[in-house]
Amino acid sequence: SRRDFVVGAIAGTAAGATIVAALLRKKTNPDNASAGNAVFKTDRASRITTPSFIAVDQARCSGCRVCEAECTLVREHSFDFGRSRIKAHRFEPQIDVISLCAGCADAPCVSVCPKEVVALTRDTQTGAILLNESKCIGCQACIKACAKDRTAVIRLSRDGKKAMGLCDLCGGDPACVKVCPERCLSVVPANVDGKILAANPAEIARSLSQSIYRVGRDR
Image 1: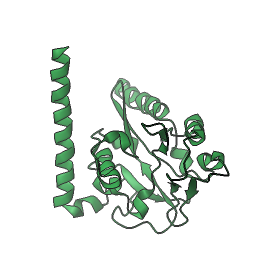
Image 2: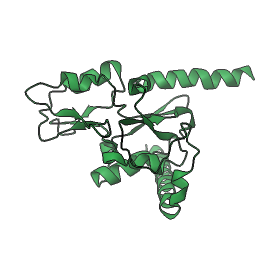
Image 3: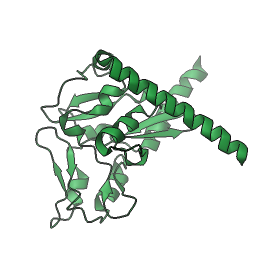
Image 4: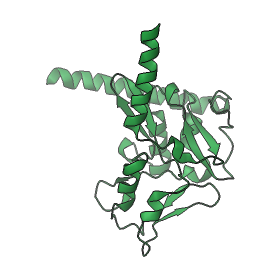
């Protein structure tokens, strides 16, 4: 309806204003990005030199989608959030869940990539799973493997020809971590397997919902 369109437009404008404001704060106050308030107490400004992954403190996420905006701008030079390698999911009752590649130690996506293709490899320095788009044949084997037991972050491109959604940690300097206004993203050395955080977003939302709303009922 016309009313729904107007409401949606207003909501979209407000969300866009929030994202722009957060990005401007980051640009004008770079020290703010490296403050030690992340739950994992890591240096958000340092470059990755050892195998690592991005951990998410889901309880701190406000659903602002600044991480998606930054990822799309930095990695894809686009404003199309659909191409972001980090995804924000909203569930009801209101729970926001961030999903991205966890760089699982056993990397089921890499294991199922056809041997004659080898489109997926692991960066020996950062530990990130890298996608060679020129080699990808769009067979969707990696998509199914990730969806089966992990984050389901790998998806098919809009033209149906390539896989997409794998985070390469920006080559060792992840932009999303530095720009998150709630500091819920942190770079963590891969001395533990990232797959412990690689649950499906719906499962994470269910767990958070039970925890948050149970606390509310107990008060």
